[in-house]
Image (cartoon, rainbow, N blue to C red):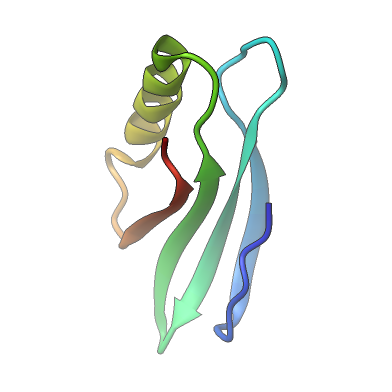
Length: 77
């Protein structure tokens, strides 16, 4: 997974998604957008429908109380 940006990166983290037959991760960046922090997460939801729903719920819970804008991008199947 990669995210290309012209914006300054404040933080980068690889996040493990809920377990399945293969280890899955997403890439989360905190970017400086003209003095405002935004979070951009690149992901590829895969496997069965149940696993994709578990991954989506995990991310929804992770960002539920976020105080900054969140952008999810990638292949959401």
